Image 1 (spheres, helix red, strand yellow):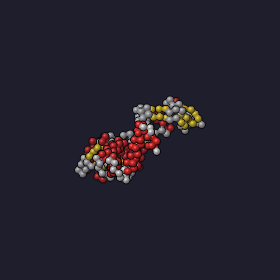
Image 2: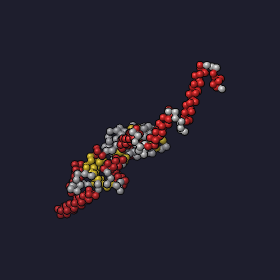
Image 3: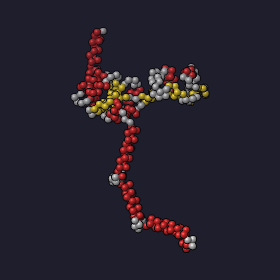
Image 4: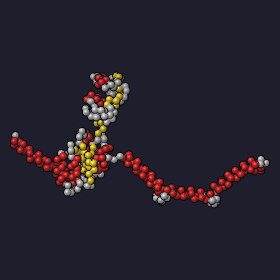
Length: 301
């Protein structure tokens, strides 16, 4: 037995050395390195992410002590990278990419998957069994519906849920019975995503809270900034390509109004001046008729 253990020790050391060498290579090759929390992450999530980002992100599981050794090896080549050691607690997955750290965080945030419930999972929102045909034949499973207070009836040889029913409230723990029934119904209520603890890029280590991007908020701020810049350019009469058509239209309208109020006859203002004169003449005629009815026939003649 001692000979077997002695033989295994050099092999284990060699595997660790090779793993450190591989990590050193990856740390030198990629611009961005992220430490992701592997706790409660399921295999199907990792498979989905690896397949989805095959050409953009390399994911690798490694022991924290081996990553510490690799970080120390490249500390001189990439200043600041060694600070990632502060986040090497618990189970971790490491992401290597040349995307920006913020884009990586956004991609992972958008790559949520819905998973079947497991015993002990906490409901992130109310879990509802919807009204309708379950596709399940009647049998002992009827008691599970009854225990969870889900109203049912038998129709066309299948169990029908007669009313939308909340089986777990947000924040509550999912029991074995609920997890089992949800699985049989094909309901996947657990929203899962890979969470970044911290990411290194260009000499800076960004903790998770700084990597969170409110995309909708950013879009609203950008739209407001564009509108404010647009209004400023227009009010200040700055002839930019976007504002120039509006400025020309405004100048044309103001020039036309000025000529009309000054009663200067031009091809553009003459119709306005004639219309104005006609309106004033009509108003004067009406006033004269009010003064003397005998003028009505003459004025209208």
